Image (cartoon, rainbow, N blue to C red; front, side, top):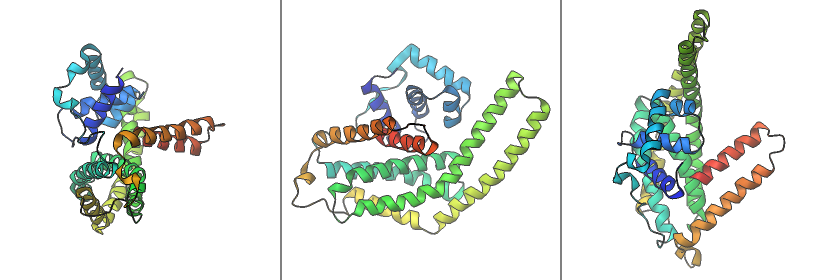
Length: 287
C-alpha cells in the first residue's frame, strides 16, 4: 500500500513524535497495516476499537497521502553527506528525548503506553548503539547497550502481561458481540482478567522499584551527554570515522538483510526459539 519513500517518511514521523502528537496514531495504524499486521492486532496494539482501525484504513485507501498534513512528511535532521559519528549522536539524542518523555509515567503510573513506547524505543536505541559502536573509542557504546538491555528486561514482563490482557479483553468483547460466548464463559474469563490484573500490578511495581534505584536515570543522562557531543570520542586516525552516511547506510542495510535472509533459510522445523530470533532480527533491520 505504501511506497518505499512514503513508508520511510511515516516511520521517521512516528519515531520522532512524542505521544499525543496529531496524526501519530493514524500514521502508526497505516504503518502496521502495511507491515502485514491484522486489524485485530492493530486495534490491540494501538488501544483503539477495531471499528476505528477499519475506518482509518478505508480513509487512507480513499485519500492516500492527502490524509496527512505536510508536516508529517518532514525529512530526517541529518543528511547523506554527514559523517557517521555525527549522525550517531543525532539519532541517540532523538531516542533519549522519547525515553525521557515516558520516564515520569514509568516511575509513577507505569501505564501500558509508557511501558510499550519505552521498550520499543530502547530496542531501537540498542540497535543504533550496536550499529555505531565501531565508530567510537573505548567500547563506550557497547557498555551503554549492555545497560539498556537490563532495563528492557525489567519492562518485558510488564509489557507481556499488558499485551495478553488487551488481546483477552478484545477477544471477550468480540465474543459477546457475535454471541459466541455464553454468560457462564464470560464470567469465567472475567475471573481470568482479574487474575492477570493482579499480576500486572506486581510487574509494574517491580519496574517502579528498579527506576527508584536511579540506574536508569543515570543511563539516560550519559546517553544525553553522548548525543550532545559532551561524551565519547570518535575513532581517531581512522578513515572509518570520516565515512559519510551515503557510504555506510547501504552496507549496514544489506548486512542486516543478509542476516535475516540467512536465518530464514535455516528455519527448518521452525522451532519457537528460531522464530523468535528471526523476529528480533527483522525488527533490527526495520529500525
